[in-house]
Structure formats: C-alpha cells, structure tokens
Length: 240
Image (cartoon, rainbow, N blue to C red; front, side):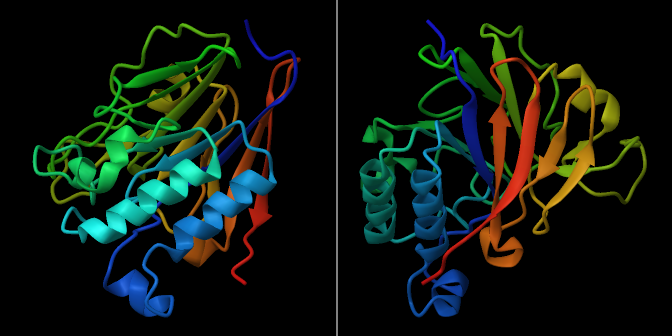
C-alpha cells in the first residue's frame, strides 16, 4: 500500500544539540533548535522529518539532555530519520544508548536502529543514507541501494564539489559530486554539513542543503508529488 497523495518531507541538518555552545546561544537550552524544528515539522503535517547529520554536536552529551531529546521526538509524533554525521558518527561509544533514544518508536537512526535504508510502507517511500561510522573520511554517496519503493529520498552528510578530486591533498573530507548525486536515482537528495541553505544540483536528482536551523532560520520542505517530481521550498522557523 502506498499513499495516493503528495508526501511531505521536512529536511534539516547540523542542529548540534549540546550543553555548551548551543545552550549559550539559547538561554541555556541546548535542545532549543531541535524543538523549533520539531514544532515546524508537526505544524507542516510532515510525513517524515530528515535530520541529515550532526544532530548532536558530540557524543559527550549529558544523559539528561539526551533523555529530553528522546522525549521531544517521541512527543512530536513525527516519523523521524536521523543520519549520523561527522560530529555524531555511529561509533561504539555513541550516546545512542543513553537517555532512551533507541526506544523511540518514531525515530530511525540509520546504521544504528536500522540499516542504511528504511521503508515507510504506508507511504510507498524509501529513505536511504550512508551514516558516518567513525571520524575519518568517507564517500557519503557510495554504493546507492537498489530501491525497494516507488518514492525515493536519499540523505548525505558531506561537502559538495561538482567534480571531486579525491587524489588531491590537502582537500575537504566527505566529498560528493554531480555524478554521484545523479547515480542515486533519488527524487530528492537531502544534504547536511553546510550551514547555509542552497541547491547544488537539479535534474535528474535535485540536491539541497537545508542549512543549520539557527543560521538558515528555515527548514526545507520537499513535497513529493503523487504524479511524480518534487517541489522544494524553505519554511521559516518560529523561535518564540
């Protein structure tokens, strides 16, 4: 069964929940940017919320703060897919075991609570992303899947370069380029790692950075049309 209607996907990245910098910027509330994003996703009646890397600033997060994030995501009721990034990779010492994150039924952590793909059968939607599994370099779009669903969204956390040269040193890490974007076969590629919101590729696979919520002051809203194709707009966040 799949949804015979448009699918609304809300996309953000680089939220950087923490108890230091983010807390200082938000009157002591290091989870405030995530709370604002969750409120927007709920108001937009999002079918899925994508957190495209660096949701947490690091793995050294107080248990109480992780517990609060778990509660926030659970209480939002929004189906959420979290891609581990370079700040919060899927390492053995990760904070996922703390504070109940693994038990949140509406949260999928790619590479942790599920594989690299998750299928939402009721929507006919598959979401795929390669999680960062350590702090080293990797290719965020290597080996895209054989898609199992009609609607296809990919996630990646890395640095866009139209034609990346991985033989050059020094260079940026976690490179992704135009050929790799097109090879995903996705209808929409949700990107993280850059703080600003910008589109970096168009057909056949539109690829967008959402920017971080505190810098961009928006989230991306990708509407996958029932007839095919995707419309993307930026939705302002309410910080009151």
